[in-house]
Amino acid sequence: DAGVIQSPRHEVTEMGQEVTLRCKPISGHNSLFWYRQTMMRGLELLIYFNNNVPIDDSGMPEDRFSAKMPNASFSTLKIQPSEPRDSAVYFCASSFSSPGGYGYTFGSGTRLTVV
Amino acid sequence: SQQGEEDPQALSIQEGENATMNCSYKTSINNLQWYRQNSGRGLVHLILIRSNEREKHSGRLRVTLDTSKKSSSLLITASRAADTASYFCAPGGELTFGKGITLSVRP
Image (cartoon, rainbow over all chains, first blue to last red; front, side, top):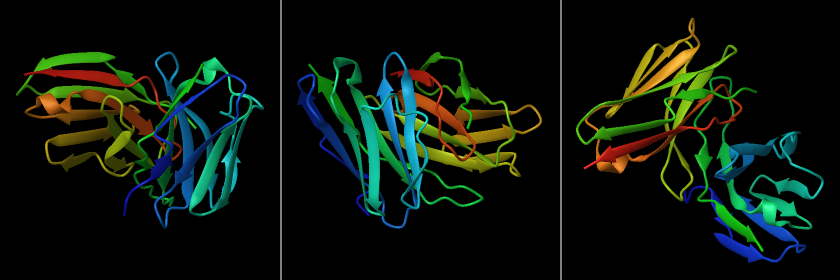
């Protein structure tokens, strides 16, 4: 398995533009997580899905952020309109959830710069 | 969900020494996980310990879990320069992370 695949690896955009980040989880995993990491705030959980359904989006900063998971193999995180303070590294992670729990696999991240 | 509190925030040791990192949490958990993050990379899962386990080993890693004290420790034995990274604990099944521990291993 190629692991969790995120695209693009780097994104530079101008303030006000729409940004779409993509994630392909590991096949067979039924939980997917979006995180944002900055020096100031550390690693923040934005939203997570279980069986393609959003379970907890309380970490989404504001209405400019939205996430979808149309099927088990694809998820997007969209920022519209983008602002300089959205600059961060965005990580996607997936897991197979079960009562005992399993480790999570993270993607390599998308480094977003909004200028 | 809850996040772990790692301690110390930063640790600097000489290659070959052991590194001990601690994690505390607040509410009961089914498992606790430790992750490593190298600079500029995503987190890598190191080890998961379940609530009915007290100790677990994986190579040079040893993890302990004390559910009565709501704490866990990660021991890296015979550290190497390549162990230089940030380390995070994640108590419970919903992954929220603390600030992590920055480990520097000097050659």
